[in-house]
Length: 72
Length: 72
DNA sequence: TAAGACTGTAAAGAGTATTTGACATATGTG
DNA sequence: CACATATGTCAAATACTCTTTACAGTCTTA
Image (cartoon, rainbow over all chains, first blue to last red; front, side, top):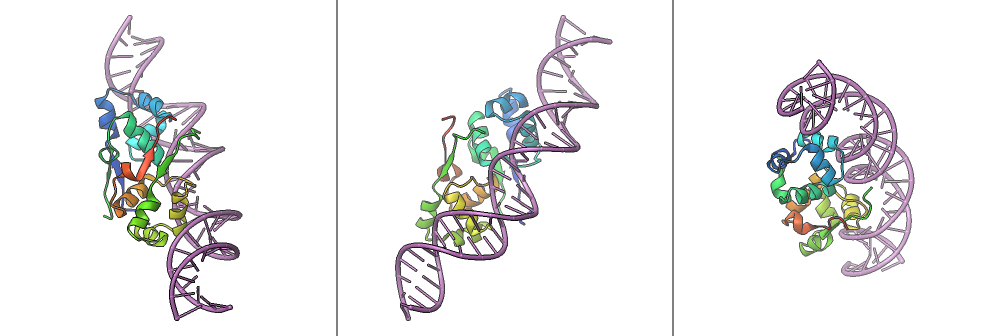
């Protein structure tokens, strides 16, 4: 239900700005490289836990890291 | 994995402040009442999508709604 | 007492997030 | 060329989120 709604993210841009590889970011967040890759390419959304971890590592507020478009 | 880390939340307090029942909030977020109940009682964390929905309905920033304690 | 609204909880099942391992490609460097 | 690094992707397996259904307890009010 509600399939139209997406949580886009700016992870790739922010990661590259800090000169981190997907593997670097994965290690810093204690997840696999494939997980970072999948999230950057919008295969699925991270868990809330990982979202906070990403925001912390990338030193970016959650609201900036993810663009949530309500009820499109 | 990573079992020590938790994402606590202030949903119950904020919900009651707005005089909403669990059912009210559930309906507004398009999830079941049990889901709201489980999240309020820390049975599990919501998805990122639902977290944004809760923040939107409760008109509260994500960082205020959830208390993320990193690497305890 | 009875009835209604609100909340806590449990079990079964569907759907999603994440992992590991593998393979492909592209780029840069010895 | 050979080697390393970074990235995209796939498949199978596991863990977790979330749903529905159901029952129980509390509180208020008629």
